[in-house]
Length: 119
Image 1 (cartoon, one colour):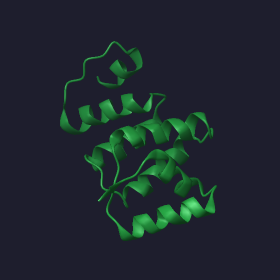
Image 2: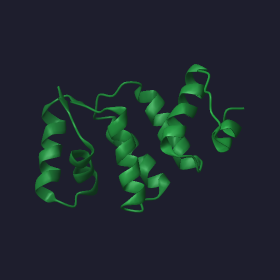
Image 3: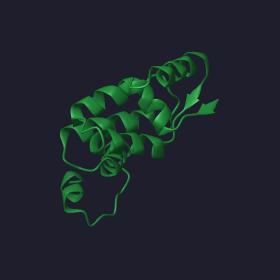
Image 4: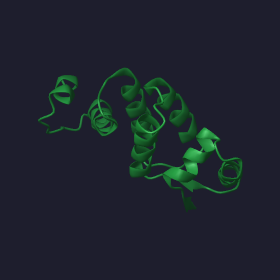
């Protein structure tokens, strides 16, 4: 198993450096690639803030990528990406919302937008 960082996976998604994209594609096809939640959060942040990628496109690209990776709570992360597309919440808040909706986990927050979604 190999852990991938955000830059490696972003090169594959964006295909803006052919050599790096090919390397990552080969990695995905030949090894079990593990994705940490923190790396997924970084990818969402970079796609949105650096590349001005629309939330819908972030959801589509990253949800498709998750099918090729090993990640804890894959269903939670896919639902979080869906919430990210559908709301104006930050991605980490979408993860919390996803845990709440999927597993009925209690969330303590002062964030008004998140609090409204937890009702």
